[in-house]
Length: 158
Image (spheres, rainbow, N blue to C red):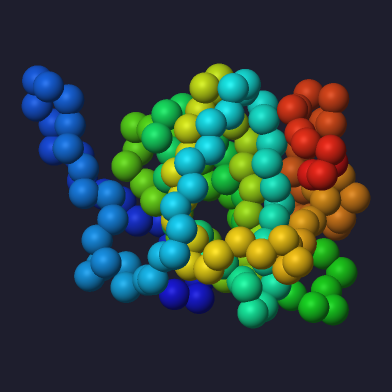
């Protein structure tokens, strides 16, 4: 799949809680090589926008285990003056996975304390091919309306 896509998974609920089949290779037909779990202590934590260049470009399949996020992605293209941003709301209650194809930058803003994100990637991380788009310096449309003083962000991302 060359374009971003939302997948819904079923939750079978009863008095004990619920059961979900959250990934089925027959449906997605992607080869994932790694799975990552990210815990974010505080609301307004921003991570991203990150991507890896070829030959280590990564497709990502993202869901929220606890809490909620605003997920931001944009296609990485050479010789452009600005990035076109798409955003998606993902929560622990909506049963969504977001597919982020290779050659898309990805980041998210947490909307709640103690948010947990789970994602699978199609290629191993390689720090020599990692790139980022600085949300405060790059031309992004529509702009991410986040003030630097209102978010928790790493030095690397700011």
